[in-house]
Length: 387
Image 1 (cartoon, one colour):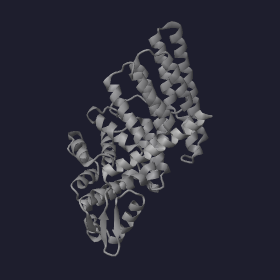
Image 2 (cartoon, helix red, strand yellow):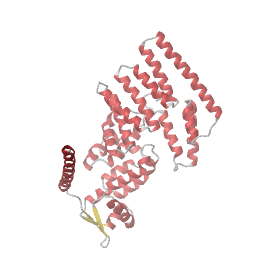
Image 3 (cartoon, one colour):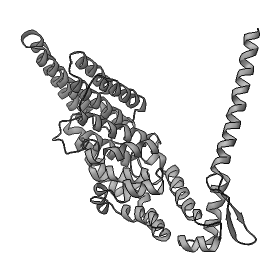
Image 4 (cartoon, one colour):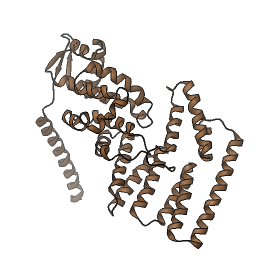
């Protein structure tokens, strides 16, 4: 979005996260005072008049007409200068200089958060661009706009556009960057399995510091991998991955969360899990899926525990997890009713009996079901043909 040295997070995405925290009900009032000052300073330093108006409407900031008028005046003055540079380049300079002038105007619209005009200007800049790499850079700018506004339709279309561009060429560095962008999109739209695969593919080639720091990238990678990978894959790709081992200790509770799950230390796992909930809840991309993710994690850990037993007492399971019998009973009842766990509770004997489905039998039942569906479709089609 704004000019970066290649190792810093985009100031616009930092601003978007701070605005998210300002709106979050679980953030303390004292913290919100600090965040409000940071947001206002960021908006003013970048002359973001359009975004300032949006924040006033959303009651995130209070209106100061003199501040707004000052930013609007600076916006008009800067756009006038940029238009003059474009006109000068078109009259006196070459195609490369014309493109650079248009790109400068695009970046300014992005900087002040004028979304519609930024997208229009990026299209104009693209029409002046020949090289695939430079076109890809424009797509990355569009993706950052989409992430700033959480516009998933724009992000999805931009990712498809980038993939089409790569069919005509493109370097590996940009292809690897696109994987992280797509992974973040999948994370934000609850496609955790695809997100985990894309993140794991990018661990050793990560360069998208404009989205988030490497620590945050590892945080997302571990969280998505835990609920999507089988035990063997989790060990190979995550637990023993040197790139993850060098960073995971810096992130509170994450190492305990991962290793206690793999080592079957369920009491420690629940403690680490409780420590991570706040981080997940206050994450801009994970927050909408907070409850879903919590259920998925508990499904994974309960399934892993029950995998080792044909039957086990509820008391033994409660002791292993460091919780009460009533809690485990209530938890498992919900998961069994939802079809997440394959077991049944014998309340009289206080026992859990597992009834894991036979894979071959499940495949047979699925084949029968699909066969019936196909026959019904053929019968409907034959009636149309007879007519």
